[in-house]
Length: 244
Image (cartoon, rainbow, N blue to C red):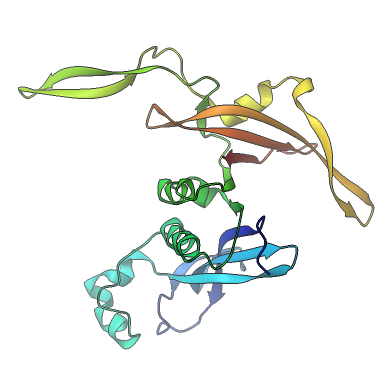
């Protein structure tokens, strides 16, 4: 099934469990249910190419309480390894991505994930380490960015007798904007129509636009990426970031 332009997809899914004895079980959000319920949750890596699609890897997600003393007896009963530690869902996805890339068993050119992973520095760092891979990850509409990367400098200050340094934006009035505001400000000439599929009632079309932006992280410029926007009539546009 391997193809040079294969796609890796990362997402989680929940499985209802009525008992309390299954490893990692807890009251948590289950995507297949659309609500909080007693369930197990796994993070999955799927692979797709022109040859087909399949699951490539998986990790069990365990909430932090499972690693406390209150759960020690339950961990022993479920044979949880002694050295197991808590990992977020994006961290589990990053581990799978690193393993798949390192083993080289499946070629891929694209990585896709929703905003849970698009918001994670751990996952984005793992993506950046994959040379030649293009990534589409969703981000929230309130994510802040600059259209032009602002200049920064290190400023020194004294705190409790110690001289310290802090990186700041040179022109603080150059505030970052929400990506939703950037999308709303784009002129009509920036948008183009594309047919994405053939629906039962005819072709399904969306308007797309893209804009180069620098993401804001803790008030400072971070990654410079392509912001790709898909617009549908009468709905707030979901925002995608294309990492090159």
